[in-house]
Every structure is written in structure tokens, then in C-alpha cells.
Image (cartoon, rainbow, N blue to C red):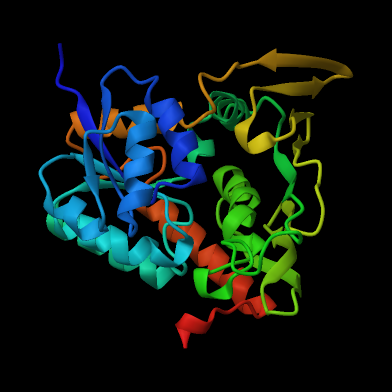
Length: 327
């Protein structure tokens, strides 16, 4: 049997729990270690998932020989520092989205991965979703003619959360744009590339956290209308309209288990049931890349992450979204 790939969990929180539930479905994967700034939190997590190696600091995990690849699931602000430490320690990295708070952060991470000759990928799991992959193929093959319009939203209510929470604390790079706005932006980028112009406006919390952002991405022959927000629950659906048909991704589209094709007055729904929650597919991609000794994924490359970071930077600049730690 092929040697199992050993994973280390950096930041044992809610997202890490979801990730591990899918990691356990991957036959050649083993959760080998967990690290937190709190040894007790790491130990409790280890007890819950029978993880052998427990560390009360991230640096100890990176310096150990207990893992091959780490999954970084901390708040956005810490992605850069922890990823750089892991890469400099020779560890492969899958880091939650957004990979960095800005393009300059992402560029530093990519450069460091290349210097150390280790794998780095942003955990933009929707790119590996089977339904989205199929829709991408259909659009590329001209199934709905020329793609001229995308409409995608992502919103949930978060105003009842504590201001120290990840989504409302400016010191943790809070706000809807980096947390969930990245998904609609990703969709527009995946299907239409980088726009010629971006129009965007935001509303803010009294503490300065961005709460709602509406965007229009302008292309030479297409437009994408995008939204993210914490002020209400939205449908979180996506529509791709072309000259000869439409494709709908149902709620919540970023984890879709199928799609509907409307063409010539006929509507047909196709199912693509997910294995696990949906993280399963990005884990498979990481494993395939590591087995092939690749430094990056062909499906979600370093350049893809840099491009999306640039789009996020542009939206932030137009809307006046800044964080205290940026100076």
C-alpha cells in the first residue's frame, strides 16, 4: 500500500473540523498532528480526532518531522506569517482562502514556496467542486453560446456575533469581502477572467468592518454582477447567461451538488452528489500534486491566487476597506 500523506492542522477551529471530516474520507490521508497557540485547545482537538502529535505552538509543529503538509485554518490576518514559517520549514501548505490579505502578501508566499521548492495552494475548494467543473467544461465548449452575464451572491447574517469574532474584528481582517465575497469574485474570474473595469460600493459597521459590498465587473462583451454581505441571508445562487442558454447553480452555489441547464425552452437538471462536505475534492488535488511532485495545482495555480488577490485589492481600494495592521 502507498504511504499515507501526513497532515498537520494549524488552527483547530470550526473550519478545521469540517476539513477533517472530509480528510477522513481520503484513503491515503492521515491526520498526524495539530497545533494551536493554546496547548489545551490542541489537546482537546487531538482527543476528539485521535491525533497522535499535539503542539502548543505553530512553530513546534513546523519544526517537527511529524507531517508532510499542513492545512492552515486560522483567521485571514495570520495566513501569511504562518504559511511563510511552514514553507521555510520545508512543509507543503494548503492555506484557507484568501491566501493573503493583499496581493503583496500572496506574492511573498508564492516566492517563498518557489525558493523552498515546496507545494503551496489556496484552499479555494469550489474550484474542485464536480458540478462547477462540469459547468466550466460546458461553457468552454460553447453549450450556452457566448457567455455575456454572471450573477452571483453570498450572504449570511452575522450582526449578532461578537465584535471580537473573526468576521467583525478589524484586527483579524474582518468583513464580508475577504470572507465570502471571494467566492463570487472567483466565479467571475473562472469564467470570464480579469475584468477591464470594476465598480464597487460598500456599507460599514460602526467599528469600520465592511458589511456589504456590491460589485460590477465590466468586460468587453460581458458583465458580472456580484454581492457579498453579513447583513442578511441571501439566496446564494449563481446564474451564467449566454447567447444560446443559461446555467443555474443552486443554493449554496459554492458547494453545489448539481446544476440546471435552460436551453431552447427546455430546462434540465443534472445531479453531481458530493462526497463529504466538499473539501474532499481539493484534498484529492493536493494529494495528486504531491504524488506528482508538483509545486502548484494546474486547476488553481499560484497565478490564479495572485489574480484574485489583485481583484480583491482593487475592490478594497474603491470601497475604502482597510485594516489597522496595514498602517
